[in-house]
Each structure stands twice: as structure tokens, then as C-alpha cells.
Amino acid sequence: MIQNESFTLSLLTVFLFISFFITFFVQKYFSKKKNILLDADFLKPQSFHTTATARCGGLAAIFSLSVFFIIYYLFFEKILLDYILVSFSLFFVGFIDDIKIQVNPNIRLFLMINLLILCIAFLGINLESIDLKFLDTMLMPYQENKIFHILFVLLCFLFIVNGANLIDGFNGLVGMHLLIINIILLYLNLENTENDFLFILTIQIIILFCFLIFNFPKALIFLGDGGSYLFGGLTVLNIIKTNNINPGISSFFFCILLFYLFFEVFFSFFRKIYLKKSPLKPDENHLHMLSYRWLRSIGKFNNCNYLNSLFINFVYFLLIIPGLYYNNNGIFCRYWFFSLLAFYLIFYSRLYSFVKK
Image 1 (tube, rainbow, N blue to C red):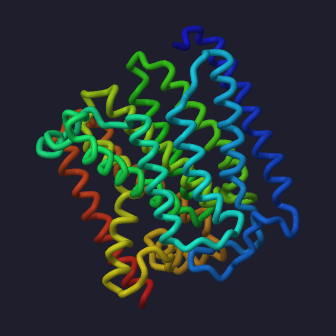
Image 2 (tube, rainbow, N blue to C red):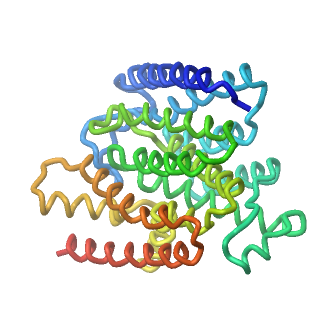
């Protein structure tokens, strides 16, 4: 356990500079012309940038995390096996696309599912309690319902990992969103004695912050699929750990915290099926894309890329405040979660109608 607060603070400060310079040098190196990570495809449905930008944010993040894992082992003699395996597995799946290796989306999803199943089963990643009686009964005890438990945790990872990748299209959008979530998790864990976990959360916040310096308001780098998969997976792991060590917090509060990432994937999947499109292929009708067109229309902005990120994350933060205040009230959190889903549908339908007109 980390006991010396001054030492911990010094270590975090040193790591802040390390992470910043890793991101700086990665950005400089991979922003050169004809680089394999340079994204110059401006015709993609999810593309809203006008200059070639390197998708190297994930690479800088995995380098920074690797340095942290080494430092953590040297000073505290612990191997963070769960974070290491989840980080490198998901980064690998996403980085394949970042370096422009053409892989069928179905194959990539299959690879992600199998790697996640191996991680969940080998590491024993489990939810110790869920604020929903029938589901809690099905999941517990863990040893008797291991297969169902693995599948449930797998779905949690798939929704959030793909949700993080789905909204990664505007300067600062996914970075700020994940930063908000992890700062709230840090706040929720301040009162418990899990100092090691607080340290790990703070490290992730530092890496996200360093990435945002180079991604917002002007994008010098993108997170890329490797980065969005990486941080999406780490966020799920952080949520599961926070849920397990804070039994007083309603599990539905964590649903509130993740509602945007979750429902963006869930709604988009069925929306595309209804429109007879492939649910695995991107289109230009996601919520953050519609809000971008709406802002351009009402504000007459030439480029409101970063303003769109601020708008979405500001609205998101306002919507989760009631849940944060009543995070230990299971009934309130349950109804507030479903209210947020209704709000999403109403807001989406209004934006869609406005844009189509």
C-alpha cells in the first residue's frame, strides 16, 4: 500500500512530466509526412478534420502506461496484471486499424471478444454485487454462474470500449468524456482506504490530460482506435473495481455514468439494422455528428469542432449531477438512468429532424 503522501505526490508530479514528454515526442515523430499513422482520409463519414493528423494518441498512452507499470513494480513490488493484460490486449486490437492494416470488422470484433473472454476468465474479473435483484441472483455466487458472469462482464466491456471508439471523432470529445468519468470515480473512492487504486486512477487521469493538451482545442494528434479501445477498457475496469469496493453506491449510478457511451452503441446498432445498414460500419448520423451540424447551423461557426465536444460533455455533466448527488439511492438512480435514455432519444430525434430539414 502507498503510505507516504509526499512521496506519492512527488512520484505523480514526475510521471506528469514523463507522460507529457512521451506524448510530445510521439506527436512530433508521427506527424511527419507519409507516416503510417497519419490520418489524411477526409472522406470518411466520421471524419471532421481538414489537415492530416497522426492517430498516435493511443501509442503515447501505452508507452506512458508501460513506464508506469515498471515504476509501480520497482517502488511497490506489485504487478498490475489486470491492467496490463486489458491495456495491451485492447490496444493491440485497435492499433491494427491505426496502422492501416485492412481487417474485416467482423474479424476484429471476433478477436476483441476472444481476448476479452481470456482476460476476464484468467483474471477473474467479476462484479461482486449488482443493484438489481434478479440479475444479482443470476450472477452470484461467482463460481456457480461463472459462464453467465463472464458473458455479462464481456458485454460491459464491448459496449463501453466500442462506445469510446464511436464518439472519437471531434477534438477532445472522447478525451474529456473519459476524463470526467475517471475524475468522478476518483472522487467516489477518496473516502475508502484503497490508496493503491486511487494512485492508479490518478495515473490514468494524468495520461488523459496529457493527451488532451495535444488534442484540444486544436488536434495535433488523435487517440485512434488503439487509444479509444485502451481507455474504454480501462474505464470499465475502474468502474468494476469502484463498484466492488463501494457497496453503498448503487450499481445504477455507474449505469448513469456510462449511459452516453452505452446507449450510443446500443441505439446505433438497432438504428442501422432498422435502416438496413451494417451495424459494424460507421455512418454520419450519430448524436455527436448531428449536434455538430446543428451548432454550425445556429451559430454560423466556420469550425465548431471543439465547441461540439464542449457542448456534449457539458450537457452530459449536467445530466449526471443528480445521480452523483443521490449515488447511494438505488431507486432514484434506476429511474434517473431510464430518464436519461428517454432524454437521449428525444434529443436525438429533434436534432435528426432539424438536420434533415
